[in-house]
Picture: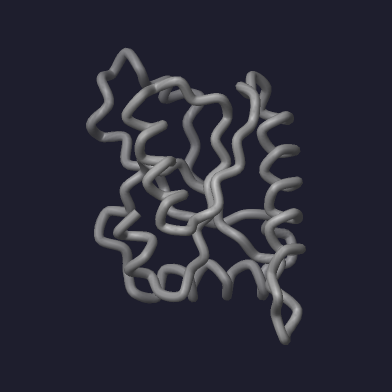
Length: 130
């Protein structure tokens, strides 16, 4: 959370897909107490359902905003346990620039660090970095 907050003016919302892990539930409760929106959903088993829920909740969130200007259609999605390892102060600016100048891009973002995963967890022939 601290790395996201350090990137600048960001609005953070949470979409919980049926979590049962007590420390995560406590974290989400604390974030709600800080005024952040937490959407609670049933467990999601298929990737297509995850995308559907994320898109629906993002549209719902944008519809609640009272803005003088039209809100951006650009949004970020991450898990709360992902740590951005020393991100550039221009990280979000760079992502937005890529999305605005490369119309074929639907998504941009950092690569996950996988050098600390055991070899049995990696399927190198199926892993690609674009």
